[in-house]
Every structure is written in structure tokens, then in C-alpha cells.
Image (tube, rainbow, N blue to C red; front, side, top):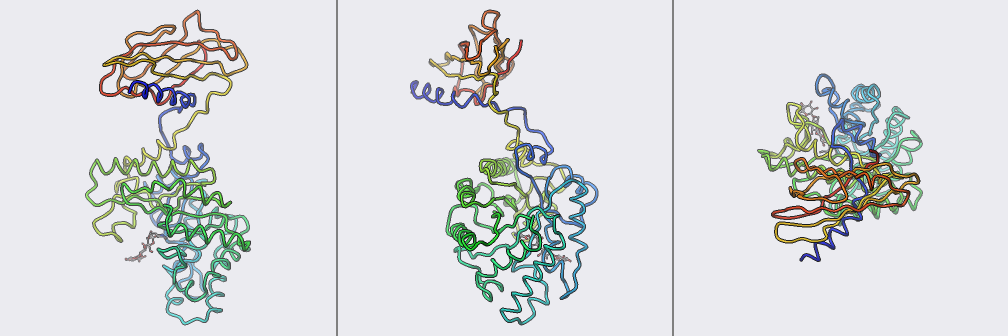
Length: 446
Ligand code: G3I
């Protein structure tokens, strides 16, 4: 047992040289930007005033119009466009330095009545579709960062959905829509978007094969959107691997409609679980270089589609109905917290428990000057993960306050030449468990 513990500590020590930095804060859009992704939200355009507008502008780096860009909204009467609601969201985003995810050009839902009520030949339907794509992508040319060109093209088993487009035109409608979008707005990134493709499985396999086929035909698909309408506690274990296999095809990926629904009422325990779920989705995106960002599908429970579509369920977003942040907000902020790279050119530190007995232990730490100049003084800080107390230390001036430990040089080991190291040790007490610290932060200076 003791050997296993020591081996685990030694393994961990190798990972401890990268020091996570400061506690999570906000706003989320800045945290996300600093980690190289965007954090976006779907919004309802006519709510963009007051506190709702403030949160939307302050916290999110990207906006998706929840309904305002859908075909029924922009062309309620054939040949007569009404861009007013979409324009409003785009103008708001531009006024607040936000990107826009355009949603969506071709989808089988929220189609205008004149289209669904009409009878069309395949050629007529194809022309109506490409004209619509040309008009809308053209209208917002250069102002939309990503377009969901085709939304929800697949059935649950991963085959082509027998929607009006799929059934009448076959798979070729997808290529036509993408080509029309590229011609209308050459700079927007063009996405395929779907739900229930977050895990590796039949539907995501279908999407994977579809993307491969389209790329092989030279269709300008730039990305795949994973909607991620999730159920509490059911973030797929394969999410990150799934994102990665799509990225390996040479396309970007994004989480486009994240929410985590639960049965009501939402207890403190459920909200805590939800916090972990939001965090793990954000972490999966951060882990995949080609993951462009995460968009939540509405940021407040007062603006979520869930209660209308799943009676008895809700509380799916990160702010409550009164615009107070829920634990999910902290989950996202925590996942996005800055990571300080392993202090380049300064110092690194390893830590290992070398002996352990009932209630007591000995640990050894070694600090190394990884820079090219002499180190003039050093300090190592860590947090005791299970409340362990240090009772004695050597070769260092060590203090403990609560769970926080600070170990500094002594006069005789303050100066370290490049490549030089200083070892220090400690005895401590523990009860319950004695895990090693999850991070040690090493800084230089006296
Ligand atoms: O605008 C009318 C309003 O005039 C009327 O009084 C009211 C009465 O029900 O309905 C309003 O329209 C609703 C519309 O949202 C705007 O609020 C529709 O009934 C309602 O069906 C529609 O729901 C939208 C849903 O897509 C429709 O499919 C949701 O807001 C929207 O969040 C949701 O978004 C979709 C994504 O586009 C694609 N992925 C799934 C996601 C969730 O379903």
C-alpha cells in the first residue's frame, strides 16, 4: 500500500511543475478569450434591454440569435424579407465587440408557412433553398463569424433525416447549401450542426462519415457543431475523444447549444452536479485544439426552451430566473481559469511522499532553476488537499496557514545557478487520506 502511494506521488510529481494560477473570476468572455476559445450564448433579441442585455454583453464573447435568423423569421411572406429582428441581434453584438454565430440557414423546423404549405418539384425546392442561403448569408456578409449552414441533417441512426430537404433532394442538398453559403460570404466559417452527436455512437458515426464524404467532394465544410442539450449527470465520457476525431478530419468543432436540464425542483445537490457537468464540457473543448468555442443555449432559466419542450424539467442554464449566477457559472469560470505555463526560465518543483505511517508522513520536494540566469531566492506554495498539517521542515523556512503552505529558501540555499537544485523536506500529520498536493507553485525572488 505504502509503495503504491509513493509511486503515485512520484508520478504526480512530474505533473506538478505546471502551476495553475489564480482563482476563477470573470467575466466569462475574457476568461475564455485568454484560453483561446469563445464563450457564447443564444439570446432572444427582443429581451436585449436592462439586466438581460447587461449580462449578455458583459459575459459572452459571441451571440447566437435563438430564433431571429430562422427562415420563418426572415421571410414570412415569399419574396418579402424582414431582417429587423436578426439585424437587432447583429447590431447589439457589434456594439459590444461580440462575434455572431448565424443560426441557421437550412433546417426542417421553423420554416415559413408558404414553404411548408406549398407543393414543389425537387428543382423548385433546391432553388428556393439556395436562393434563401444566398440572400441571408449575403445580407450578413462579413458580419457573421460562423454559420450553421445545415442544422440537424441526420436521423437518430445516423442516416440522412427524411426531412423535406432530405426526402425531396437527397444528400446533395447539403453540398448545395454549403456552396451557396461560401459564395455569398467567403469569410464565414461554415458549420454542420446537430444534436445527440456528442458521444461516439451511431449518430455521430453517421456525421463523421458525412463530413468525410463532403470533404472528399470538395464541399466547403469548415466545422461541426455539437449542440449538447444534455441531461444532468450525463455528459458523455467520450465527448473529448469524439470532438478530437472530427478535428482530425481537418474541420473545426464547437459546442453550439449547451444546456443541462434536470427534473424540477432543482436542489442544491442537482445544481452542484450541473456545475460539474458544465465544467466538464468546457474542459473537453479546451482539450481539443480545433475546438473554437462553447455556446450555451440561453443564459438564464427565464429564457430557456426546456420547460416548454420537457414538462417538469428546467433549471438548465447558468443564471436563475432573476439573473443571479448559479453554481454552473462557477463551473464554467473554474474550467476557464488561467493556467500559468510551467514557469519558463524560472523554476520547477517536484514533490513526493517518501514515507507514510498511521497518522504521519515524510515528504521531500526538489526545486530546480530551469532558467539561464542564477535564481536569487525562491518560494514554493501549495494547498494541503486533505487538511494535512506540517509539523516539522528542514532546508526551508516553512509556514502553514489553514491548508495553505509556503516554503521559502534559507540563506544558504537561496541562490541557485542555472540547472541547480535545492531539496527540502517535511514531516506532517494526516487523518482519513493523505493525497499529495494537486499543484505546487514555484516563484523566484527574495
Ligand atoms: O413567437 C411566437 C409567439 O408569437 C407565440 O405567442 C408563442 C406561443 O407559443 O410562440 C412563439 O414562438 C415560439 C418560438 O420559439 C419563439 O419563442 C415557438 O412556439 C417555439 O416553438 C419556438 O421554440 C424554439 C425552438 O427552437 C423551435 O424549434 C426555441 O425558442 C428555440 O430555442 C429552439 O432552438 C433549437 C435550435 O434552433 C436547434 N436545436 C434545438 C434547439 C432547441 O429546440
